[in-house]
Image: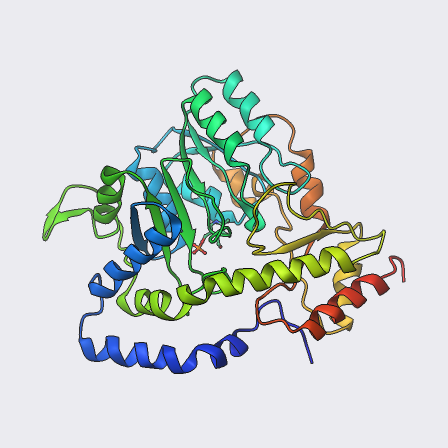
Length: 366
Ligand SMILES: Cc1ncc(COP(=O)(O)O)c(C=O)c1O
């Protein structure tokens, strides 16, 4: 049996009865956009996250973009961020007319907070920061807090991959995604902005809805970026209650991989020491990625690449202004070598062992 990167049909079998009941209820209720289900989900999400406000939007990209904009980021703002992430992190910055400033990554694939510190110290006009809690590994909160305080930057944390960890609590706002592959994935697109600030929350609520501050009163150039009632109800009543169990299973799988993969040709960096991770992905590094992916495919295992090209090397980046805060060599080397092993919560122990055995059998050059 093939082992896919994510097994949505298996998830559907688990949730179907509850999801269909929610679908019937929302359908019969007759309120489909920005109604009671969105409000109830926002409350539950904010409470689970430990922040007072959550604002549901149409995607993680929009959550980042709306969060930055609500805080005043715009044309000409320079935003320190990572060259290794989903492209959406940088796209949010670029779409606002702002300019990404890339700092290199550390040995776990996360933005290097020491490099960020230097960048802020070198350039007092650098005011914006979008750190990414990549792979589900929460960046060190004490270091983030110190950096935030010292630099006086405005920080929007990209928590698209880190829901279920203590991330997103340091900056002015945090953005997350409900893209189906995410740890809290919907049956389509969705996202949310979380914040301590009433002002940021109400600006985001206006921005997601054509910039309206009251019905037919448009104060801002906004978006149509509304989380719909159906998805809010599914997320709230079917998926959110499962998140803790799913996260626990991901952690078990990561522990089994870390203990079981014993092949000098495969380096599993794991999470930084002391970091809390929800193991959105399980990255390993190999010298010959194409050969390793072929080996996995031969054993009917789908490997992923997160991410094969460093963001500043993407073709579109030739058309926009961006800056590098130092060398980006680690990022580029990471992007050449990274492969993600399957780590969804519906993997069975037998499948985990098959992945471990396939890794341990891998012989580069054969
Ligand atoms: C780190 C990161 N940031 C932002 C996003 C954007 O989220 P979405 O796909 O919901 O727009 C994603 C997901 O693709 C992501 O992984």
